[in-house]
Image 1 (cartoon, helix red, strand yellow):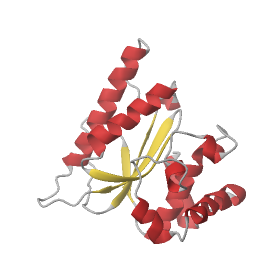
Image 2 (cartoon, rainbow, N blue to C red; image 1 turned 120 degrees about the horizontal axis):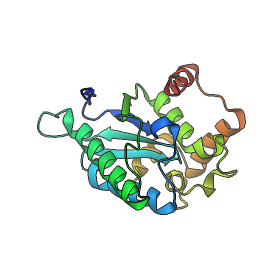
Image 3 (cartoon, rainbow, N blue to C red; image 1 turned 180 degrees about the vertical axis):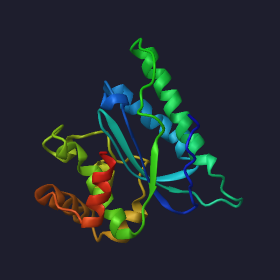
Image 4 (cartoon, helix red, strand yellow; image 1 turned 90 degrees about the vertical axis):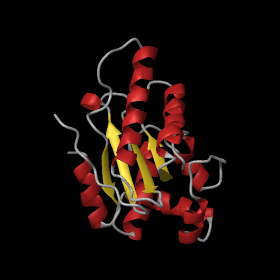
Length: 200
């Protein structure tokens, strides 16, 4: 089956995600998460600015803005970066655990984020994933997202602090924004419909 070409537009945010084949695990130990993030920096960061990420045992979410370029942006730049990331990560996992075959459920998915309200609600939904899925009780306990950078508890590099300052008066405001969702589990209807579609 030919690979589906995903159109990417310069200076637009995209929600990039994928899950394990048959919804099985893609991360098995701490080093796996760290290796994946290393590959994000190697392959994706040169062509896109990472805003949000959350790596879960069976899937991952990344929100990134395609970098502006002086030349016409080729659709293949981001797709090629994600393909290299997926292939190199799969090879490393197969070698580490003496397994064979595919790891991911096909090609990664990417959807443009249509407006700032949608984007902000998507950010808090992604950061809340570890609590929502029952992996941890306290969102700050999950090390494999950049939530801790967003609230000033860790000094990582995969974060856009200017974006946070533009939309939130303080880091504590973003923390409350996420915690409010975890208390109510309510999102705007259009965002909820979109997120429900990802599960199909």
